[in-house]
Each structure stands twice: as structure tokens, then as C-alpha cells.
Length: 197
Figure: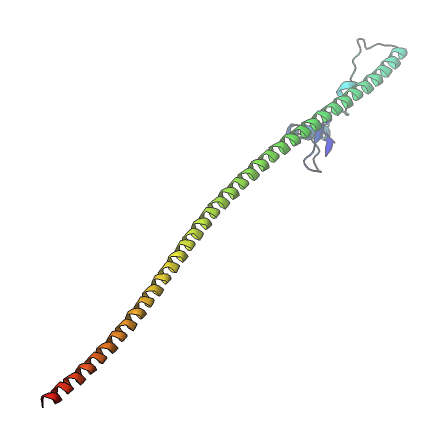
């Protein structure tokens, strides 16, 4: 909020940080307080703006000269007020331009920080995704290798079981043949024994 300093000796425009601010700075506030105290004690006269004080060369002037001087004082006072207002407008414009430049600079800095932060975040996400993809690929490779080894082991077990079954059937066949041979031998021996009698 733009306000004017209430110190009668200053009157400059300033940007107030709060609504209740009356002075542009601590020195103006102290000077205004000092003037108020002196005026209350009667140490100062009425308020006379600096620009409206006009001194005459001689104290004995005619009424016409006094009237002319009064008109000149009024014109000088109006010109001084106009100059002061123009100065305040220029100062206000400068303050607004400075504020605008600060805002633009701050916005550019924030934008740059956001861009850097977003880039760093994207890089971190990309690195994490790459690492996770590599880990998943390694785990999948290990799982495929383990599955292949399990299949090979199962095939070997199946082959061993088939060989065991074949060996068992061969042994069973051999056992049956031995039994048949033993029976044949027993019959032959029995016949030979009967023949000797």
C-alpha cells in the first residue's frame, strides 16, 4: 500500500508494510514526535512549510509590494507543492519499478530452482528405474536358470527310474530263469538218481 509520510518536513511517498504505518522510517517518526512535543510546549509556532517561507529585503514595503509578495508567496508555495508532488510521483514510480524488477528477478530464480529440481528428480527416477530393471532382469535370469536346472534334474531322475525299472525287470527275468534251471536240474538229478537204482 502506497502512503505519504506524515512528517511535515518529509512527505515522501513510501510503500507501507502495514496499514497503520504513518511514517517512512524511524527517523521521520522521531522527528515528528519531537515537533509535536515542542509545539505542545509552545516552543514552536504554527506550521510553515519550508517552501512557503519568503524573506523580503526591506521591512518597510508598501501595501502594493506586500500584496505582490503575498501573491508571489502563494505562487511559490503552489509551485513548491507541485514540485513536491512531482517528486513523490517519481519516487513512487521508481519504487514500483524496483518492486516489479525484484518480483521478476525472484520469479526467474524460483523458476530456475524448479527447473533444476525437476531435472534432478527425473534423473533420480530414471536411475532408480534403470537399477530396478537390471535387478528384475537378473532375478528373472536366475529364475529361468533355476527352472532349467530343475527340469534337467527331473529328466535325469526320470531316466534313472526308467533304468531301475528295466534293471529290476531284467533281474526278475534272470531270477525266474534261475528258478527254472534249478527245477530242471532237480528233475534231472532226480531222474539220474532213479536210474542208478
